[in-house]
Length: 130
Image 1: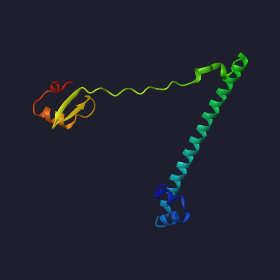
Image 2: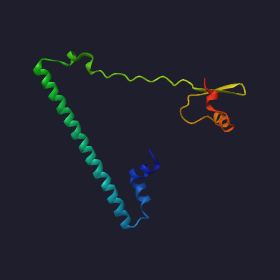
Image 3: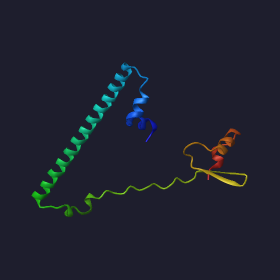
Image 4: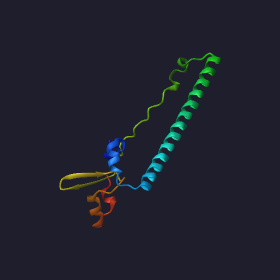
C-alpha cells in the first residue's frame, strides 16, 4: 500500500496530515471524497445490475433448454473457447556483419544503429537484404 493510502486510512496519521488545512479546504476535501464515494457506489450498483441481468439471461436459457429436453452435457465441446495461437516470430530481412558479429533485423520497429550508420554513409538497405 502506498504511503498516501496508509495515511488516508489511519485515523491519527490522517488527522496529523490535515491539521494545517483550513475549514474551507477540509470541506473541499470532504466534498471530493464524497463525490468519489458516490461514483464508486453507482459503479458497484451498475455492476450488480449487469450481473443480475446476466444471471437472469442464463436462467432463461436453462429453462429453454429444459423445455426442449437438452442438458449442458448435450452441448459437448460447443461451449469451449478456442485457444488463440501465438504467431511465429518474423524472419530476419536484413543482415550485416560488424567486427565478426552478424546482426539481423526484421525491418520492423526502430532501425538498429549499425544499419543507420551504414545508410548515413551512403549505402542502400538493398545491400543488406538476406
